[in-house]
Length: 300
Image (cartoon, rainbow, N blue to C red; front, side, top):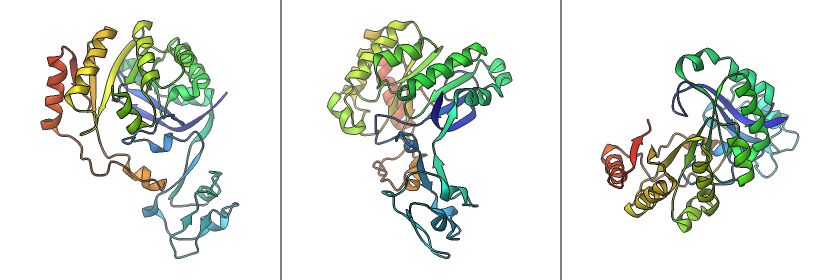
């Protein structure tokens, strides 16, 4: 079985307990304005072009079989996105790695082998594998098999999810998952659709499913100044957590780390005017949750 993977990142300490290897799956039904992994949104391989690394050699234009690159030696090449198929011919001849393909088809066993290399660190720290993305449930059959084989190898399993998926896909993954990181972006359905492109109804239904499943879950909120940090949303989110029997949430402060990826994909970064919130912004939100009876932590 093959899955489309953008990256396998080792030694992560922010994506579940202990030291973990994070597998980033490609494809997500949401388009969150603050997404830090835009290369994981499309379900297809994509070309990234990092202009600052380009040596202007012209080899990419000559190698492209679809005439999707206009350029010659000495000039910065122009990519015609409508013609690009993500075949990777240009990336193969780019010695400076200015051109990269986001998304590679990998077999389950290839990923398991990569994850198992750091098993000694998992055993020492209580870590394991975290499947992220993108939305892991978008490739549920692959993820289920990956998690199942990792469990057979005595590796702790975790997924990061937006919750936007079918209940059947979620149940299959839950059956092979030890720990779940579940994002709650906005409780207002209209605003949720405005900033992610989708309603939150399915997400809330799946939050209830997860809470009743018995799988250990941590609900998290990406905190975006001016978008979901208002008192009404904090109160509604706290109310949902109480209803689910979950008394804890983790805040993930907005950051600009993914901005360069948007540029490499020729996409507009829609939240360029928003700054990363500091303690003076985060601590009052934390206190609001605590005032509503929810234990609140802030991610590093």
